[in-house]
Image 1: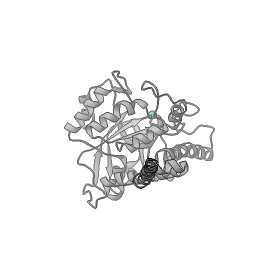
Image 2: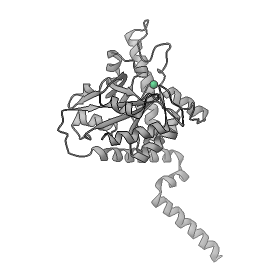
Image 3: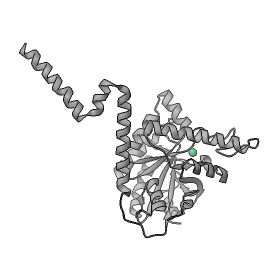
Image 4: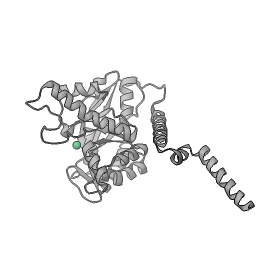
Length: 310
Ligand SMILES: [Zn+2]
């Protein structure tokens, strides 16, 4: 009898301690809805405190404008190369070379904070972007970002990520990151997330976000807002993130589209125009239509480094 009481007592102690030390775990056992909210709030809090740690300083940057090279990656493979694909060895060689050349990677949020609030940036900032949300970025890029303590931005296409989430098949050769994996990437602290449209990364019925000939301004406005807003909503729900960066599908943009996206809260716009841009303090328009350098896998790391300084 004593033994039974001892067992019951131990169980009670265990339950009580899990409630004290692991509130989320306790909620899992009691109410799944509460758990979702609690975990999400906790993650948002952790993310906010983690991100702010780099910019919560009163130190101001005395520079009025800063040169900002932005590198555009797409697929990462084990051993293949292409115009829009580098292998893991090339990526590792790039990351080492960036550090040797004195660059420090930054998040878009830090760039926006410099422009809008004059917050500090490293002496030679560098933004690395990974377009289209390829699953191989999670497999091959994330471990390298962790190894070299490098920050990056991933630009998600909603339709692609949704398809992979529904199929549940993760293959580095062709899959895209699922909603859950986007959360993992964001929670890792090495990736910020950008919007690359929900379903406008297509050649038809329009090329990227370009207005169709037979489309009124009102129809265009509604269509753009619905599509891009749909991905904003999804990312907020699945990863607790509200992107401020928009990467134009195929690099196609227009003044109309830019104004619509500005009204939706986007602050930074990435093109596929080759080159390096300057960002300017107190000049938010310097965040619009930023140039990038495509990391063509057919070139060497040294050729890439040379392009950054052109
Ligand atoms: Zn793309």
